Length: 571
Image (cartoon, rainbow, N blue to C red; front, side, top):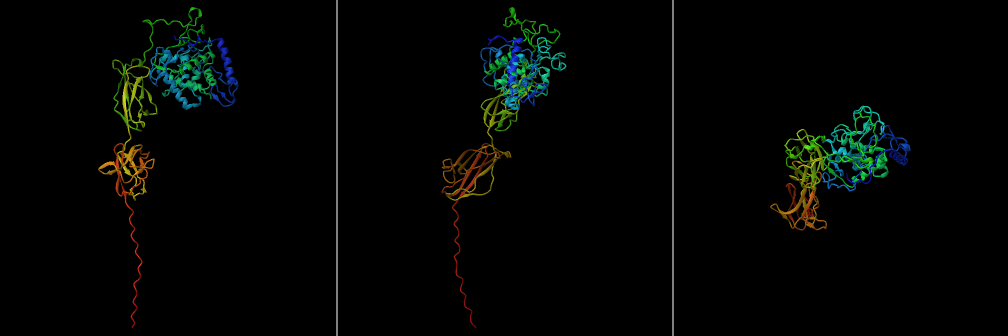
């Protein structure tokens, strides 16, 4: 094993005394005003100092735990999410599925209880101390351990006394309780703390997604802020009431915070030192054995771990997972991946997992990762998606949602927890387009020389009859219908400096497909002029502008005298 910070810690009488003192000190610092229920959950009303940490047996029933400490050297962090980094010391890495479960639990808590500030590295530290990261990552594609992980029966013989609370439904023991699963929950705690972390409709303590999310909620069940040391200590002690346990978890937390990396499932190192090395000598041999390996001290009590016996042909091998059988990945009929900016890709990526002989492999987790300079995501806004292959060995990725950034990018597919030949898919996001433009008004656009046009030019862009929003456009005052070069006289726009400009670029239609141009002005040239508007996609509209002198008003008729009236002839 790699070098350690110090000797292993064991839980005994001295530890219990230290833990009791620590709990008392921490309890005394708790603010009043909160109580806990029978399960240790927060409730209303006053809370005494002794109730600061629930008077139960914690999440694990204070079961034994691994006491190995981290290597002295810092772990190598991965350069980006989902990228495996080779490392000779597997102890420094975390199995892919287990790591994914921790990070998903952290993400869920950011939404459910953001004030808790729970880091996934804390779950990793507890997961390592409790089960060696699910026994080195021996889990299936859904995150369920290949075989149950059970602590020793809590019969009071060197451990707490917890008689059966679940009729053996979780731990298979109808006499005493045992801690169960990767996060080592006792059945009575799991009954209220259990969560469904992988959305399969079940709360299974043997599933690392369920267990990690349950542990996250357990650690955040009070108004603790785990970014502060005092609350962090309280939360860890509430999980397993031992000062040695607290110290060990904090060491691993510090280690993982320095950076870690993903390793294939099933390749993690299982710790060897245990807090119950000297406990349970007279345990009932008929009781279900602990899943955790017993550690015996050679040479009359040395703390050095016993050397592991070499494998022999008769040594039982760990069961092979479907993931272990995958040799390569193949495209499963994915069409060309192209979408307009802002649209959902019409086609989804389909990838098939195969053995070396070409047989399909079901129940394997494939990871789809978007790579490149793009803001395209999978539905839900994530750049990474993990999908389990179906009975035909095919995994279909969530739909891609194109962003606003145009260009090419890649979707890379790999096997979660394995380094095998993957598949890259090229994808392209094209700019938004319009195929038609129309003025929103029929008013003639006229102006006098040296004046300004009273009406603004506004057009609406559509594509296949639908509104074409966020489409790039250009407006140019051209010489003639047959000559689209910029005119050097006639109407003009004004730029930011107030100078004449006869071409506008960088125009974009709004959410309703509308584009309203700036005010137009006229120089002293009279005549009929053309304004041409074009968009991405080829839509074109030519607008006629007229500059003419104001009509000369007709002279008003001059006043004339009335004709004289001849006097009436006299008779």
